Length: 345
Image (cartoon, rainbow, N blue to C red; front, side):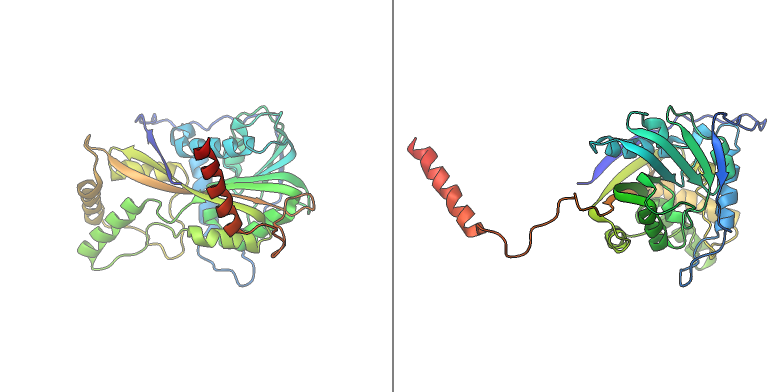
């Protein structure tokens, strides 16, 4: 079932001075990053991973990075809720593409014994959020995890996998490092994310420049996600869709926040810049087509949540075909018999 949430922002302008966030102590830091820009043979090379690393590093260095954390905080909290729904403890956990650690802060040490957090942006790891769980920060690419097979009881990922060039390989890597009966809980942006912004830019650019270029990166379809998880080796799959709608004063404030989140477009085929007149036209189209009664404009973020388990003999399995001892027709007769019994009483 589709659920909707609405987040409201308090708008504050950061001070002019640029002060780097303090490096939080008490964390071990390791490095296992694969040379960025390399992809596995046969993989599509859609995103400039070096540029994405620079974008995330820049965002983590801003004077008030928490100003732009509202969406990641919300999704991290919802992933934590799904972990708490699993009635077991996890000795060793891994967060793939952790950013500043938006999932670990919502978990406790009774549920997770130790957390490994990986990301391609070293500044995000250095400025990670406080958590009561012992944490190890590892500089690593999502497609090339530097861990041995059967290492972790739990792997999580929040709003990171939509930027990888080889999503099947990334999911296979996650399955590889999970222990048997381990679970993967993740979230990523879906295909309808920022459809208002995409439509407004396309209409304005077509009208002003005679054509349009992609300004919003492509996203995975929900139908493909279950297939990719199954192909990676996961079973007992759960995939559900959620929507979060955030209201902004205008299109330019939305784009400023996307930059502050480190979510600017990094596709190789992106257009380097848009003319000023096109941007103003897009903002006018956005407001005319989508504005709320209070004058703000909405931005929709579609989130895919996924849960998959690594096979273990102790897991429940479906019965063999043909092993049923009662037919559905007989079940229907039983219902009729019970109804007649209730009437006679």
